[in-house]
Image 1 (cartoon, helix red, strand yellow):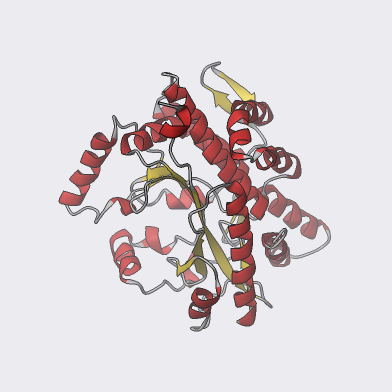
Image 2 (cartoon, one colour):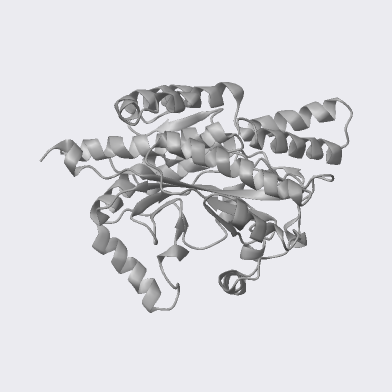
Length: 380
């Protein structure tokens, strides 16, 4: 049978979670007007729903055939949601945290699911004032989905490093590129998944939790990557929310290209080497801490390698797949992120410049939000 006939669809879908801020004060819109969400659902193309906090809004693209379509969908959704937000005196920011907002001040969305989550998780859920992005890749075969998940874990820290956008938490410069994951890890069933021996092994573990009434279904498994509980997709969830839409598209392109590269290895009776969670978690932490400004551990060499060298290797590794999907320019954009800086590093640079110019700490944090408002719509 031919390679093309056997390959998965590799369709794409992307979810983004935005924060709503008051257009004048740039503080979080803790209690958005009642008409905002109905207006979004009427005027915005694709799915728009509330998230855990009322100051959050989540969007999902339609099923996209390729990276170019994802780009069109995301830019349109950002434009449309921004337009609706402006009608209600608000702006949107694409950032995994608001630089100065306090989680204790927030109002939760009163949906049955979220109320139950807060009742079970208590303060760990109440402080979930964080946003992320998820990339779905269509993998119809269930066993293949799990096999690719096992192998793809290796590359998750590399993608996290490029997407960092949460250097601040409640006014504090945390010293991390992605502080978001330290908050998210307070929930159970998060982080990197262990390795499973096929779909039946994965399903058996999930069923144990369901039968014991620990979870309702697999949607309450919040790993960095998981088989979607709703769609025939592999869902990558480790990313911070990219501030620039081009960065989101780059992360989408890298995700689908790396997954196809791993599928090609499987077709040729090969596979990416499996590594222990101890090593994978070390690189995950380094990506959280430093973003792409430092080194990651090369497990094969047993040495630390600068991220810039690892990125060169990744781009070479997926070139064939990027050419197949016609997204080489989107892959190469990762070099722009490295040179320009991630959202996290640009937020810090904005903060430092404001402080050097004589701003107070609160004024400097407000300048960071102003940067986020503008950058969120850049290119849209």
